[in-house]
Amino acid sequence: MAPRHTHSHFTAYLSTARLHITSDRWSNHVFALIMRQDAIQTALTVSVGLLLSLGAGRVLSQILYKVSPSDPFALISSSLLLVLAALLACFLPACRAMHVHPITALRTE
Image 1 (spheres, one colour):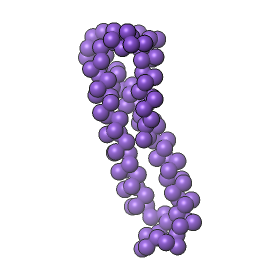
Image 2 (cartoon, rainbow, N blue to C red):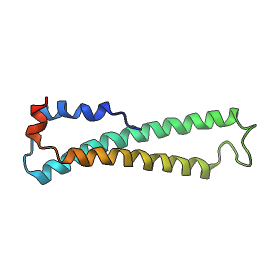
Image 3 (cartoon, helix red, strand yellow):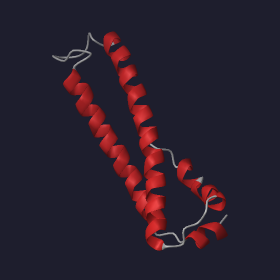
Image 4 (cartoon, rainbow, N blue to C red):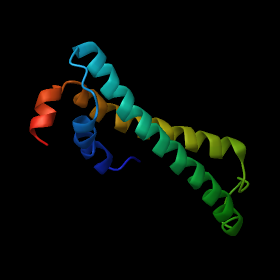
């Protein structure tokens, strides 16, 4: 769900932020930053997707078999599955970014 370019802008953020060299604080800060950005993007895309699915469900109601276009169980379960997949896909790069030393990230800038 989250595009890759959001993680590449992270090094630009490093150059302007105050660096906490303490590894525990630094790791927690990096992880929280990446997961917060990706959670916001995921929430926005899922909400837009729910609205579009309600609109498309009315159009496609002829070919749906034993499911109403606005079935709450189907909409909620598919949305939760997509949110889980998106956050898992964001979790792996966030864990990898936790292990980057701040000075190394600034040198690549």
